Structures are given as structure tokens and as C-alpha cells.
Length: 359
Ligand code: FNR
Image (cartoon, rainbow, N blue to C red):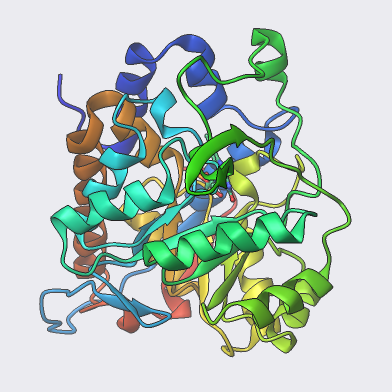
């Protein structure tokens, strides 16, 4: 049966995936409290629509750091797409370019960033590709990766800052899933020697990474910098003062520190700290067009989706990702119409109200 919504795509993906890989994608840290909270917090918020506004049919396009997106929904960076489908990030990149939205390619992708960019370029003349970076203590290596992303045409760096150590995923421990299968590698972590691909490095997640590294990055690249995973309002303010160009409000889909707040619950606090000085994106638990509109109401310029893309990819490759994106697009347009809004900019704070129970 064809899935009719994103959650049904997850069920289909689960049927098709190796259970160990399904657990890797679906799982989160420790008791998985945060990953559940991300979704249930959206359910606790109610939309209070305006009526009789005679609004035009909604248009969804937004501009993010100079990149045009056809909807306020972009792709979060997620690792290892070739575990979901043999085409891996190639399929994801084509679907994103076809949908006219931004793909944030993960540093831990299983297709090299140059090949991801080439694939997107086959579909769209000017695809919007951003690159997610874990700053490595070896700055020379970090700089080499940044240069590759720049040369491939990536238009922003999304620096993930919620990972001074790897999150503890008990599902992976139980399944003894610690290595990629033969033939699947993190292609961006290959050392290039004289243009020839060499050995693949291990990613290093280090607690020593600090604001100094953000300053360093600012100096070595002209690309806009998006900080992903700063949830504390004091950090959000520091980020703005340090000249960061945007924030992606994220708890890593519950995969890092368990019991972090749901992102939609934390968004208003970050928005208050930032006072509109930089655009905010949000990811975590976005599964419906209503979730998108709630995030816009509470201060996000756009949302990003992680697992929904992986479910589409596992279910049906590029076509599956395309379907997931189109479902979210259609639901968002429909929700805007039902709220009396003609586009993302018409969504205001008063459309959302907290309720006590989950629906
Ligand atoms: C992630 N995420 C992630 N984030 C990041 O900055 N670098 C990465 O390599 C990864 N890898 C990754 C793998 C998998 C399997 C998942 C599910 C997630 C986190 C991701 O960018 C995003 O924050 C969350 O996925 C958003 O939550 P939802 O949409 O999955 O609920």
C-alpha cells in the first residue's frame, strides 16, 4: 500500500531495512526521551487559525542565506545514506534539487561531496547545497574538507556543535553495530594524496572544540556559517555576537544528550535571545505540515527534516524522498490555507497556543 503520510513511510522503510540499520536510523540516545519529546511537543501545541481573511493561495518559497528554497522545508544532514539505499546521497541530492530545496550534505556521507554536487547539478541548474561540518582537532584536515566543500559549490557551512562526544545509542550497542559494512565508507574522510584517494580517517568528536574554532573558521572561509545544535539562549546570543550567520535549533534528533528539551519547546527561548538578528531554522520531530507552521509561528524561518528523508530513501530511493518532500510541501500549503495565511511570512505567533494534553 502506498504511504499517505510521513509516518507511514517510516513503517514501509522499517519493512525494507535490515533491522540493525533501521535501529541506527530510528534510534537515539539512552532512554530516547528527547526523540519522543520532539514529536509529542508538536502534538501539545494547538493551531488557532484566523478566518475570513480572503487570503490568496499560499506560495511557499523562502530565502535562506541568499539561497532560494521552494518551501520552508530543507534536509537536515544525516550520515550514511547508502545504508538506506544503494544510491545513497546521490538519490537524496537529486530529490532535493528536483524539489527546489536545500540539502545539507553530511560530512559523514557515504558519497563524496563532489559527487553529491554533481548529481544535484544534473537535475537543477543551480542546486542549493550546504555542507555540515564536525570541526576536527586536526585543523589542517578540517580546512581541506572545507576547501572540498567550497570547490564543490556548497553555499554554507553548517557546523554541528552539540557533539563534543558521540551520543550513546543503546540500540547500536545491543545490535553490536559499530562499523559500516564492507564497501560503504565516509567518502569525505578519505585523505587525498596527489589527487589519489587514500585511507579513510575516523571522525573525531572532541570536547576541546570551542568558540575559537568558530572564529578560525570565519577567517578561513567566506561561506556563511550556520551553527547547528546551540540550544541554550546564552550560547545563541554568543553565536550572534561571534558573527554566525544563522542558527539551526536542533537537539540532533535526540541522538546526543538525552533529556534535552524538544526543539519546538526551546525555539521561543532561542528566538527571544537572538531578537531577529539572524534567521533561525529548526529540526527535530517535524512530520506534518502543521508542525512546519507551528515552527514558523514560534520564530523559525524554515524547518529541516532528518529521519523523514531516510524513510523515503529506504522505502523507494529517489522517488521515495521526492514523495516525502512533496507530502510535506502539500501539507504545509494546506495548513497555511486553513490558517488564513498566504505564505510563511503571514504566520504569526498568535496562531499557536499551548494545550495541556496530547491530541
Ligand atoms: C543525524 N543527525 C546528524 N546531524 C549532524 O549534524 N551530522 C550527522 O552526521 C548526523 N547524522 C544523523 C544520522 C541519523 C541517522 C539521524 C536520524 C540524524 C541529526 C540530524 O541532522 C537532525 O538534527 C535530526 O535528524 C532531526 O530530527 P528528525 O527530523 O530526525 O526528527
